[in-house]
Length: 84
Image (cartoon, one colour):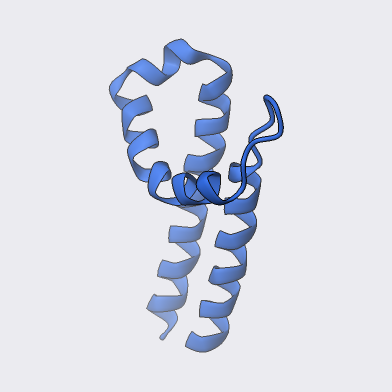
């Protein structure tokens, strides 16, 4: 069970960092063009895309990364409680 708990924690951190990197990359569009930018897009879009479809942006402000970070943290906490 300890392994599963550590795995959930690491996975949560990886997705959270990827979302933060994507936000930073959105401020510097040239960074999005490389392989790493495409990789970050590929792993975050399955999370951010559905949220963006449900909650439209407020002008130039896209709340989907913030909502995704909150949801990821809540799911991780729930899974940690279930694992023990």
